Image (cartoon, rainbow, N blue to C red; front, side, top):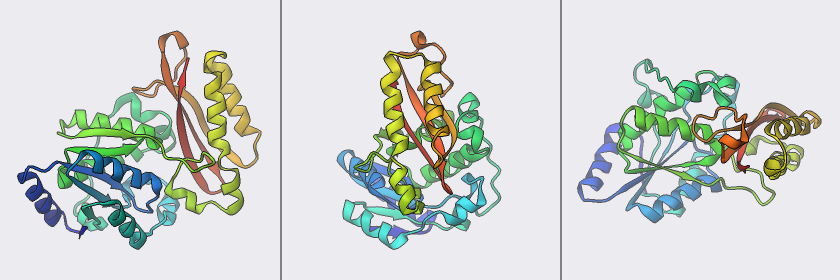
Length: 281
């Protein structure tokens, strides 16, 4: 596996592969890799000749500096996992390499960026869009693989590709979960032993709420879900919402939505966790 740190070196290597007629798959990450990340590498391996990855903790998508400061970093272990998974190249730039000049790009994703994560993390999705666009320019992928755990981010990136007419296919991949249902996340490593024990409550509540889809009103499902979290002292709920699959606007009429997404964000101690599931009516 080739390890690069410079944009120019990285792009030159990928151009050489593409000129040889090879297809390039790309998995962008912020490191602290877990089984969910590796599943994206494996999915890329199935469909692309060359598999590439990036590790870069993007400072401009953090609206909470303490979250940035405490984001887990396990670079040596990450490199080993990528090599074992069959990754061909990993790009590991520093902040100056990615942002040699002040960032001036501003994106407008309309209603999609102002709800859920966008409402609680102002500026977050502009930071995501800026870094992903730069990474696409550097890595020149034919296909890019993203997990559905960050579902709103996935939709933002699809919108970015359309907005900037980027010639890359975005491939959504299923959420990978621990045996007890907890969605795999780099932030899970920051949970205390007790917090890790109670964390599956999030997924369990989502599953029970999804089962209510055909027998209860949307208002009843959301109210029930909010009550579950508000009555659990371990959690501080930010949102529990049923939204459409396109712009994540609240669904108010079951007849107008054959299927939707049920999304949640909650604090467990000092760790903010998100998750989502399909809900059918």
